[in-house]
Length: 421
Length: 161
Image (cartoon, rainbow over all chains, first blue to last red; front, top):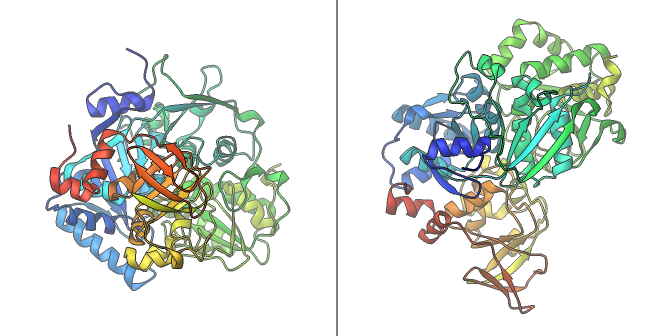
């Protein structure tokens, strides 16, 4: 039998038949997330499909994260509808303030190595960092999972991304992802899996901590990828407090449709210019653009280490420049609690930061801080489409937490390495 | 099926199809249809006619997985989207709602061209050109033929296998 990629192995194990790229398989789902952005429609589909009973409520979780807290009566009612549905069917619901569903899925160990975890939200690809086959689905797919516990999937071809070397000081996983987006383009991995690996003599990708792998898996969808997956290792099991799942590794003779190699030693800080994620330049080549809002948060850049990296730059630079609004919106309550305990939060508050509710915040303009006309925002988020943060007359730049902090210090886009010498 | 081409470029993301903030106020396709493409083509929504089909370049529907980006298009009476490629979630959502996604070379289709779609081919009546479309996998064809995942599930109650 021909060799298989990680994605082919997981979908073979789940579907019970030998599956290769291009095959369509039907698989039972281990974990499915619905958000307040997608679940109300899923409930509509469920009812229209004639659904009465949720087959496997223990495998489903809901998160009230896109409208947290509800900015209007209509969205408050969407929340009410989800709370009632969750209670009626025995589904776990993370209420407003608990955080972003994706972050909670990984924090609570619901996406395991070798598992099939989906989310009715595109950034569900993030769980691939834990060796799960993880991908985004729609509301109708979620409704079909309520009823049948299953999903159909086309097995993706895989692009092998071999990362070697070590990130230099001031350069972060976000910079790897942006450099990849530049190389691949916004659709360079469309319908395909990104499989991240290192080499035995230069571990690269495998030397990255879990929080860093999450960033790469999360951003894989911005290159069009169906999923972005890593092999599991000791770091994976440690992150999962010893839970092992059913880890899958690629065969030596697995087939890849493309090979990409990147040496991390030579990487520099990157920035995505408005209004697309693949419009990437080295931060040193970016025009000296004034920024009025700096956003630290989202499922890409709202974890504890992101805030510590940003704070280090802010402290080294002497705080936030006049005229810059700094917004801190942690990815989860657990992140917020950790920042509160170790003093990081107090330092942000002392610098004048606006503290947002753990959740998706203003990343997609559904609530939180909306930028004004002609405002330049630099953000740790994953998307910078025109209008994304709720105002089409604003411009969004994407960069690492340290690069965002450097811009907060200077009031213009700046290289974070200046503050880390 | 006959259509009139309404042409867009590459990488049209779901926020451009319908802004995330619009679904904050309503999920009703009849409400959302008036905001279709408001950020990039403000005149589009008001000028939609029966038989309009969206014709786009590569990576149509990239970005969010939000299904209103499909239901708002259907709500406007648009039954087909032709593109050189789709983001996979948009493609899935289109199939699941009975919006016909056609993957084909759209580079020689111009605004207003009259199109006929039948049997895996797109015939451009305006330029007298036949364009071959990529075939749909069996399960997707079955869902589209049923009219979407809702009628499919009402009929079958489950997926095959």
